[in-house]
Amino acid sequence: MNSAVNKTGAEPERDAWAQSAELSFRFLFAIVAVLAVGWAISNCRQVPADSRAVVLRFGSVVREAGAGLLLALPRPFEYVLVLPAANRPIEFDVVDNAANDGISVNPRDNTGLWLTGDMSVVRLRGRFFYEITDANAYVLSAAHVAPALGRVFATSALAVTARRDLDTILVARPERNVGSDRTRIGRESLRGDLVAEMNRRLDSLAKHGVSLGVRVSRVDLLPAIPAEAKAAFDSVLYSLQQAQTGIAQARTQAEMMLQKANQERDRMLTDAQARGEEQVTQARARTAAILALSTDSQGLSSDMLARQLYQEQVVPILGQAGKVFSADAAGATRLILPAGEQH
Image (cartoon, rainbow, N blue to C red; front, side):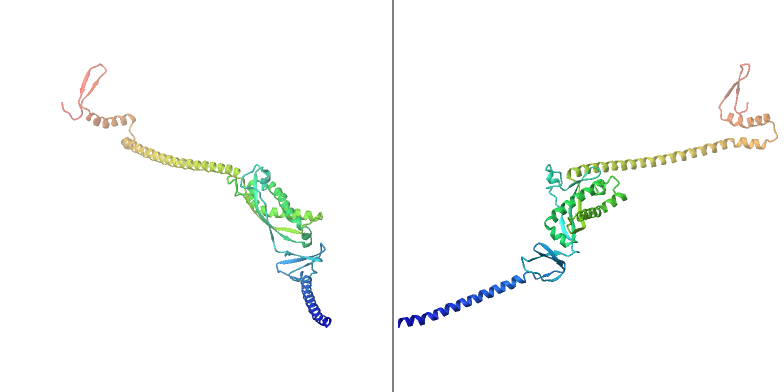
C-alpha cells in the first residue's frame, strides 16, 4: 500500500521537474538564438552620407563601401572601420609646447620656432586640413598617420621658412618696405607653398612604399615672433617713428623759414625798385631844364650855352644867400649883395 502511494506521488514530481527543465531549455535556446542573430548582424550598419566604410577580414582590407547599408560578417571574422569621405577634410592641430610667447631655456618647449632665411626666428601656430585619398593605405598606417603628419609638417615648415626672410612671412619690420610686391606676394603664398611642400613629401613617401593615404588641402597659420624679438622690433619702430616726426617738424620749420625769406626778398626787391624809380624820377626832374635848354639852344656854341645856363641858375642861388664874399686875384675883398638889392 505504501509503495503504491510513493510510486504514484513520485511520478507527478518527476513530470514537474521535466517540464521546468524543458521550459528552461527553451528559454535559454531563445536567448542564445537572439544573441546569435544579433551577433550575425552586428556588422550590418548604415554608413552616413559624408563617410565611407572599409571592411577588414582578419586584419587585411577586403573591400571599401560608400554611403548606404553595409553587410559584413560579424566579428572576429570581419571588422568595419568608418572613415570620412574623400571630400571631407580632417583637422590636424599643430602642436606647440611653448608655455608663453618667449624663448624657453628648455629646447623641448621651442618646437614651434623656425629659423628664416635672414637668420631670424619665427613661431608658427595653427592647423592644417587633410583628406583621405587612399582608404586602404590610411587604414594600414592608422597608428602612424598622426606622428607622420607632424613630422611632415615640421620638415616642410623648416624648408619653407628657410627660403624666406622674416618680412615675407609676417609684418615684423614695417620700416623695411613691407608694402612692396615681393614681400606681399611672399606672405600670400606662404600657406600655398607649405601645402605644396607637404604634399610633395607625402608623394615621396608613397613612392617609397609607405603611403599614408592622405593629401593636405589647406593650412591655417598664425605666424608670430618671440616676445624678446618683438620688444626689440617695437623699440626700433618707435625710434624710427620719432626720427620721422623730427624730420617732418624740421621740414615744416624749413618751409616756414623759406616762405619768410621769400617774402623778405620780395619786399626788398619791391623797395629797391621803388627807390630806383624815385631816384630816376628825381634825376629826370633835375635834368629836365638842361635837356629843355639844350633842345632850345640848338645851333649855339658850347660857351654861349654854358654862359646862358650860368646866368639862369646863378640868380636863384644868390637869392637864397644872405651875403656872399668873394676875393679877386689881388686879394682884395668885395661885398657882393644878392640880386634885387639897390646900392
